[in-house]
Image (tube, rainbow, N blue to C red; front, side, top):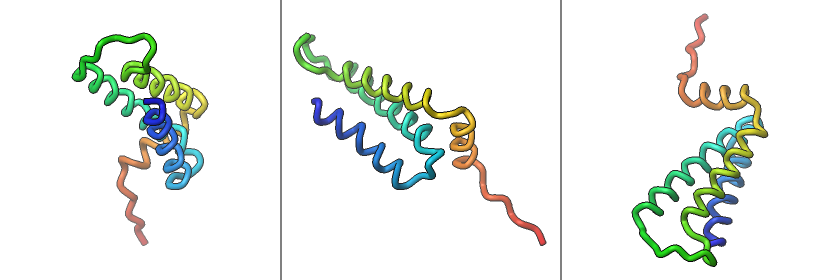
Amino acid sequence: MLTLFSLLTALPAVLALHLLEPELVLPAFSLVLFAEAAFAVIAARLIHLPDNAEDITLWDLAGGFTLIGCAAAMFGEPDQAALFLTEQGDPRPVSRP
């Protein structure tokens, strides 16, 4: 379970570093981790495993994703998040002669 957590945390980080501009990495990374946390919560609700304090559960994964996503959002600046959201949704303006 720890290997799965590591892969699901490191893979989006590496992809974001290679595919996005530097100022967009932290907002995109935090959004991806929040989405992963939501999927982990849904999976934990659907899969009812007995509680065992010694094993890592899906609830622990969801908490870890949320914690790292919050940290990435805090280290990013608000204008970076606004830049990420506006660039993704707005079409490119047409230049006029």
